[in-house]
Length: 165
Image (cartoon, rainbow, N blue to C red; front, top):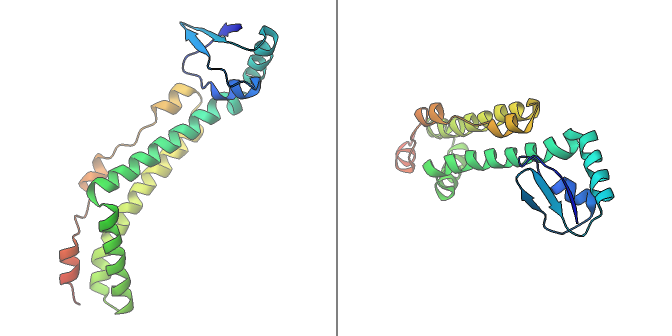
């Protein structure tokens, strides 16, 4: 068993990987306890983590935050336009392109532009994540969906079908 001081906000995965253990550590207050490793091994792994905080502390948190935010973007779009509904719009858009229906294309393109704006919000957040200097700043990155909610074009399949050019 080995112990070390630990910041509860830091990811454990990289440290455990360096230790080569699958032992589940315990944290009490600011003390990390790892069974099945020596104190020297834990100290060496902690030194390696401290020597490259970007790789061992910030990178895992950045990756986790990126995944969380892209999931939020996806769920935000999904609450307004389900996957099935988006598939219907894709089929209608394809038909409009094949049949040269520019008015229907323009109508459905509003939805595509709106989804693209959500993607841009995510890209902006990822840029903020990439430049955040510490774990707390990374975890603080959020996406404000209020403007996107207000700009939802509210397109409908019924209206798209009614546009016959």
